[in-house]
Amino acid sequence: MKKGFFIVMIITLLGFICPSIAEDKVTITVNQFVSHVALDAAYNGLVKSLEEREILPNKVKIIMANAQGNIGNSAQIAKHQASAKPEFMVAIATPSAQTLMKAKTDTSTLAFLAVSDPEAINLTNRADIIGVADNPPIEELIEKITQIFPDIKNIGVIFNYGEINSIKTVERLEKVLKDRNIILKKIAITNSNDIKNAFNKLIGEVNLIYIPQDNTVVSALASMVSMSRANKIPLIANDPTLVDQGVMMALGTNYFRSGEQLGNMIADLIEGKKLEKNIQNTNIKELKINDEVVKEFGIVIPENIKRGEN
Amino acid sequence: MNQLQLLGAIEIGLIYSLVAIGVYITFKVIDFPDLTVDGSFTLGAAVSSAMIFTGYDPYLATIAAIFAGSLSGMVTGYLNVRWEILGLLAGILTMTALYSVNLRIMGRPNIAIIDSATVFKNWSIIITILIVTIISIFMLARFFASEFGLAVRAIGINPKVSSAYGIKVGLMKIVALSISNAIVALAGSLFAQSQGFADISMGMGTIIVGLASVIIGDALLHPERIWVGLVTCAVGSIIYRIVIAFALNAHDIGLEASDLNLITALLVALTMIASKLKKKKSVRVI
Image 1: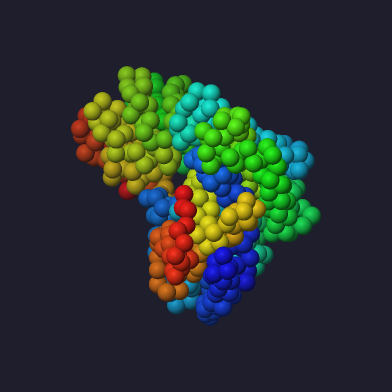
Image 2: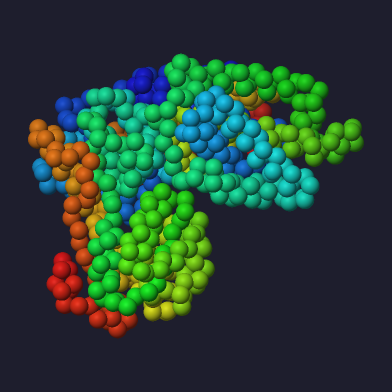
């Protein structure tokens, strides 16, 4: 027992001794909640834009931490990073933004990425909060879809009702479709194993399926794509990166671009420029069509839409 | 690591020490592998956040969270005792069901209460949680020293003999599970209030953190008396957080952020090996 206490003491003391290395650079900390394709892309976009602006690695130091999906880790990382009083604290995904908001001191600026509803979590216009919100351009996507399929009647959507971004997206989608007299068939799932059942329920009921920016659904995209091909039900989405994996068409921004946009905002602030808006929407929209799928399904894409593709 | 980082680690460690105590009661005291914890942690957070968000008093909200947690423990116990569902499975069932229940309670996957008054309005977070932890340990130690508490402990050591002595094994199991999950829910509630939000996914991995803390504390201090065992949980939980703080500083020596879990696991293993060195006596590990 004495020995145990001795080890406890040593560990605690070590904690005080190890100093963190101080440097004469602007420090940017990153608190990413979990690793997956979209969130990693956001981080990579951030780094790339800072490199392109030639402030990384000469003027800026990035300290990256990944909570690996654990909320306790996320809270600790937030406190840990805040203690160094960095100039910018980047949060990737909603829970990270919330733990950072609590932990950060007034001298740090909170910069968020991959948060779809900043207002709902009190990330509002404040001088020390900047960020890129990702509101998917659903109206524009559906507009394009009705041009390709003029007599479309039913659209299906599979989403996880435990993800706030999905719920928001599905609500908006439903409203947009209602205005056009298209019926939305919603199937809620709780984990990616339910995808197959959910898809089966939609076969014969819908003309195409919309994929929201939903972590659960996107992680099971491969099985969605194979079922889509087998049953000739095209998939559409708002994330262009999904098109390469077999989604027929997507219109929107991707997280890499959001990351770049935030990186440029941070670079502007470091260079002493003012921001137009502290919380911005993603400004680059990209239309991407999977030609292989279009050919396989025998879909005719009108010329004007093809020309809009970039 | 600087002082603030250490304080941050201690603060999170103290909150999770309540989880560790909950896990200790089920895994160690009554020898029941209870996985309800992942759900009841979120349940505590969900109940108190939803109530605080609608304008209830934070103290009332915290007490409601404790009751909700104890109820969830009872459900697991009931499934196991009355219908003889395997303990592991009973916990998993309750945990799975709680995901939907928590969504119902919150009405959406994430509630922000960052601008609302919480139980931390008077004192700093670390002091408040320290007080709560000390009171919890004191009360539990008293409880487990009482006749009733001793009966609860007896079923973990030898259920057959306990039963022969007239102890209602099933009832004791349900009582222990309900106390355990009440404390875990309290931890969830305090966590949500200290961080200013509740999220549906926040319970993920709670059981692992709790179990790791119990094992670390156990390996370092070899508790024999129950109150030492409870204190050990808190010590283990804080050590676990200090270890993570070290892991977070690993970028100074060129490690990647994604290595966090690996480094943590290695450091925990090292801590346990260190405690075993030169030690002849065998240690009971879960």
